[in-house]
Image: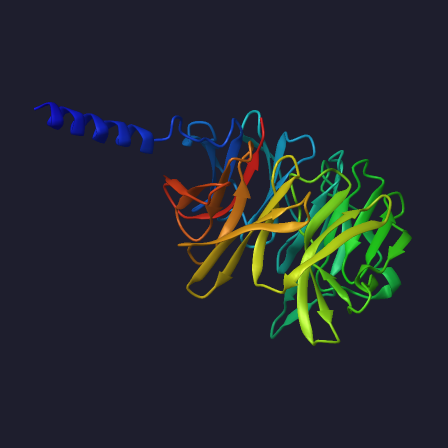
Length: 360
């Protein structure tokens, strides 16, 4: 009898030891999820529950979610790329919508960036007018539009007169400069939008290496005026592609970059809160991995195979303890950032398009 009781006690102790002393949570922020058919779901990060639903006035779910610099408004582009809707996050109501399409002319908003003071937005546009027997396609334009009146303030001339099919944009924290990213970084002052600086980033070279290629995308946890991401470079001697991490100080025109090894199909590079770590996803058909980068030690800290799913997006929680895997479905998978352990899944009532995590 004593042996039996002792065995039961051991089992209970082992079971207790295998349970975490406290359940990991992501923090106290808010998760905004663009979802079908035309809504934004509001998820409380602490409870992981949908606490509200914002009904959009636009057609279909948002294709983009852009947060204002003061984190009080959400700018969304609709699935047709013709309209932008502005949500006040305090009242969770629509306060503005805009479109440039009219009659037989459809104007697509291919990209947009809102000024820090939110007086205007810069839009990359293309237009098509339906005529009797054809569509008349207009050249792509870059324009400055007043957010209050919806009037075009000016058409911004293409630098060197060269039209661009796509352009990545970023304002300086004070809004006095607009940066255009491509093979080079162009700085336009925002009074007349003249080019005041030109920085050929693709020609930054490491001894023995070739041209420097760098993809730009907004990074919410990066310091204002800085930009971090994965770069790729060609080694002409050994005819191989290498990858690494670069951090750009836009004001000082400085790049801190270092190679990490052979190029890998990494995506969804995100900087964690505190900017000491970053994460990315390696995705091949049927094979998925989490990668962790030690930004202070300038190295790959860890990588691990995960079950994954097609079309994964990645966001860190506001406290940096969790990783949110989203897109391609109606679920958000929660992983422990330090171990890649899958913890649980948030089930949503409908498929999603994108996700934004906002600290409170």
